Amino acid sequence: MVTTLKPPAARIHPPAVIPPRGGVVLAGTPGDTYEIGITSEMTGGACMVMHTTIAPGGGPPLHVHHAEDEWFYVIEGTMRFWVGGRVFDAHAGTFVFGPREVAHTWRNCSGEKVLMLVGMTPGKLEQFFRDFAALNADGSVPPNAELVRRILDLAPQYAIDMLGDNPL
Image (cartoon, rainbow, N blue to C red; front, top):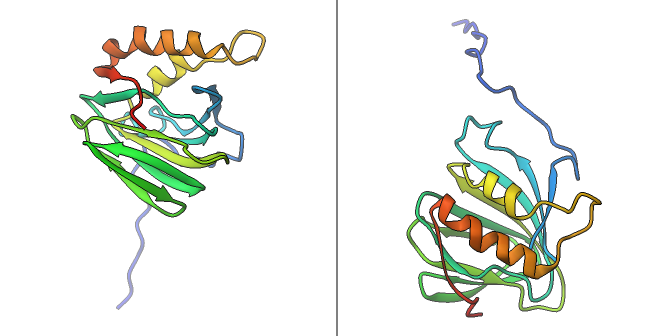
């Protein structure tokens, strides 16, 4: 039997290859960096994926997303997570899933940087990261207090409740 391959259906969004440092690089808190590689636009809003570098001590306040699921893959190092009240260390090669409506946070409790992939479904929160973590016009990183102010101001617009300080 001979099978004839049909060309794929027309795609709304073409395939893409994003080289290292080819995404949008943003400033995290404190001293973290995010690089958005797979954008919400690329996926028709289905998801977004970013490469993160988390400095020792880095991690966000305790929070909950009401509209997005979030997942993490630890590439290098060990990250401590708080998900739904459960605390655990995630070493390189570990996946972590933080479903919507479940409070979560993480902190780099080691003395070394941690590299992770972080994804969101759907991808609407990409704009939240672009808004709060944008570098200054001169390319410098805003002070941590400014980044925290931006997060607190923007969170309600993106259905995120900031629940308090990072408990880790």
